[in-house]
Image 1 (tube, rainbow, N blue to C red):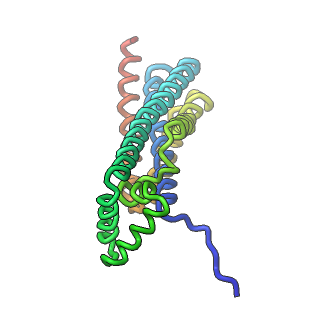
Image 2 (cartoon, helix red, strand yellow; image 1 turned 135 degrees about the vertical axis):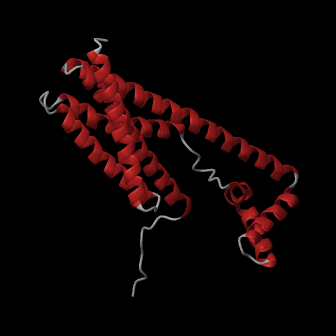
Image 3 (cartoon, helix red, strand yellow; image 1 turned 120 degrees about the horizontal axis):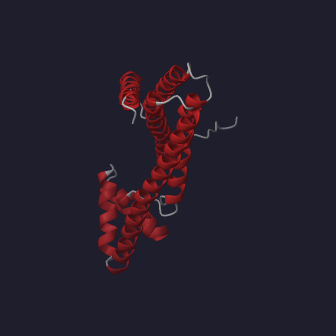
Length: 236
């Protein structure tokens, strides 16, 4: 009889995957809400299709580039911190190896191993690859899988763009009399989906996430539409 096999992800791989998925959902959500607020606000002032398209495209490009730049800077800082921590750990292993061995054994004891087993495991891990052992156990870093700022930037750019396309297309494609209602309906439906997805990825009950997401998006559209209507009526 063959032993059962499975492809379940473990440890950092699963955690990293969930983080990327969560970031993609939140990026798409930002694209939906910010672009919807922009085009609905402009729709309150004018029903000119060219003006709506221009505003929507400007919001999409500005938002996606801003998200990408922000993620690149943030993740670059995180990567620099990881590299600095690894460099410091490498120096400590070179200058005080016995103290580092004791530290590793202590960390393993804190994870439930007995003193003797922890000491033996620390010695074996140190013989195999001391830096990798300390990076994973002490720092929680995988030296072979440091955060990549370019991956984060592109993921944020694409997620925001995909989200922003929905309200942009919804405001320019339907006939003038249907634009606002189609946009509001499609945006609220999309916010239900992203709220449910973010809750499921975080293993949280979806009810509150759905209410927060939909209420926030509806408020954003309501406020910008009211402002756009007032400005349009004032001839601004």
